[in-house]
Image (cartoon, rainbow, N blue to C red; front, side, top):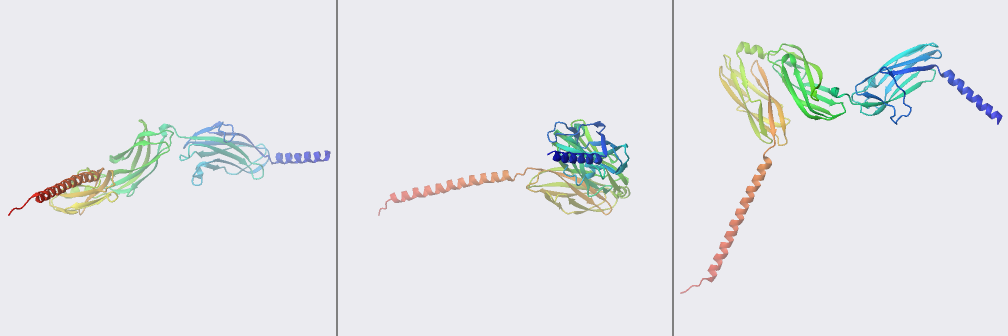
Length: 418
């Protein structure tokens, strides 16, 4: 028994010597955003949590001391539990360069992480590891509580795009798509999104009645027209989101404007004035007319062609008397654009009518406000009328049958004398 105890003690002594010899680094402190925090010992119980906001930067400082000569030391930090970590590894994972240290050396390594904006609001872990190529590695674990951002930063512009492209000729129009997200903790009411080109004094706005926490919403009805005489160049496009009465977020994009010909043509040949109601109301399943009046203020007759785009997804269109019209000098002609909304269409529908001449073109944004159709009401009235007619017919048939019976009885009761 004594021999067995001696053997066990010798084995423990060897393990202790091995551990001591392998322990070549000491972590003096770890600071996150300038402060020291106790590492999490009761993982999962959430008793000690470091609260962080979506989009918050984490500046990590790790101070280590070499207890022996070490080679290829490395420090790593990772935020766990992010769904897109394999796509955005640079946000949630950081690794230092490798470096050597001599006994007694002290070094501070700095790493940067970012809590992703798209990360779920939840509890997760931050792991910080220090090690060298031959010795033990050390890991400190910190419990993070990811929350939404302050209300003043709650809404962000997630994405945007311009159609047909970000390059447009003067006198032409383009549409914008904007995707916004509420990354805060509270629902927001009356969110206003505005797309504008301040230098050209053009803008368009759309509204959201509500944007719930964590919700993303896409707005696609922005329509902006570049002025005819806008100078060629690159212009800033501001996308502004206003919310919570006094808060706002702004994203800046750019659009390239090319020279157009409408400004030059009007100066040389005389002005063409196109007049058309911008908005008309139409019932679903019905048709409405947009009268397009073309006035030729030039000194010679001009031929104009009218095309329509943007109606195909919710209705049909036609032009009367023709899509091509000749307007004499100093005269005015009217072409009627008829738009029919589909039975299931509803809401404001924006589309384009483009008036083109030999050397000029003008794109005109129009809006059809589609309201509930009268098809159901008409069907009801038709059924009511049919029912009344049926009742009348039955009454008439009843009268005829009654008269015939009375007539038969009179004939049976009559006698003939000779």
